[in-house]
Length: 415
Image (cartoon, rainbow, N blue to C red; front, top):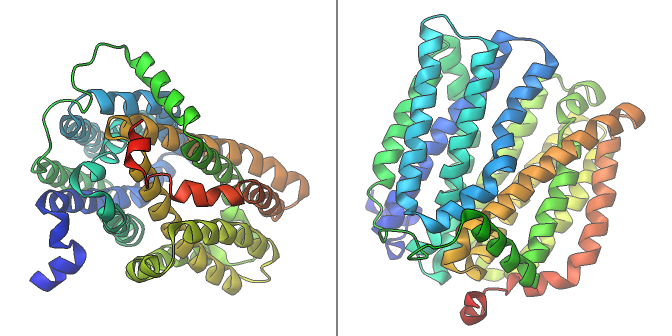
């Protein structure tokens, strides 16, 4: 058992990291359960496509409205306290939802309000949680720590949680949400045990939050590598959002895969990510971060092309397996590069800019994908994504080397 623990969380990363990893994995199981149970709850209340789409939008909207504020606050206030408080509020929101369900007073209005409030809590919890790893492990161990946290997300959130959530929902509408509450409570207890310095990372704070946000945006603007990486993430998510917005129709109507086939697409992606997790340490020790970034972005370009040309569902499943593998690798590498380059006092603000850009890109892409598919067919968004990512990658290809090594000079990052 001790050998397994050493593999999952090497002792050199320290006990605080193990508490953080345990909290992250536990919380991700709960989120994975909700990932399946949430849409099922929405569908049980309405079949109106607009309201169904509104539920997904309301969970992402808080990132666009509050993401930058959450990042600034994470740099001002005791980070552990923010995470504990935000997760405690998440518990209260879901407990209230359970009350409506059990008392048979649940409605689509209640569900939509719950989605939005839960999303608000999630913005503050996730923005702050993303700043903890650089505070707990050394710079050379950031990549290892990222792999462990990403592995928990893929396994718990994408593979284990959703089928459990669907099973619990079939057993009783409230059960998945009761289970989620219990898991989040356990995660709160685990993260509370993480040993962190008390107070905000910036010391005494005399500025307004808006000034802090401007300061964070100014830092990114003047840091060429991080600015380019932020633009890459924004634009690649526009193209990704356009293509993936019609994935369900692409699989059902274009490839005739059926509902089970569509489920296999997402499962194949998660399995590809898990395989990449198991091999990441070996791969990353043999190849540079710059090369991995180039391969991942090139794979993104080719994935859109391959899906546009895929003749049947079997080929699409294989493509999605590859997508999961490189998407996990990209997420791990890009987060590692950013956390190496960004000073501790800016981690919250810079990280929130990236997350806000990610969700903004998805929302814009989803708005583009539907009209493209309606006007030129279900493969049109994939062709748009292929051309768009190819152009973007050509523009930034030479800069990826400097981006990958942006954190090699700690003094420059601190400046």
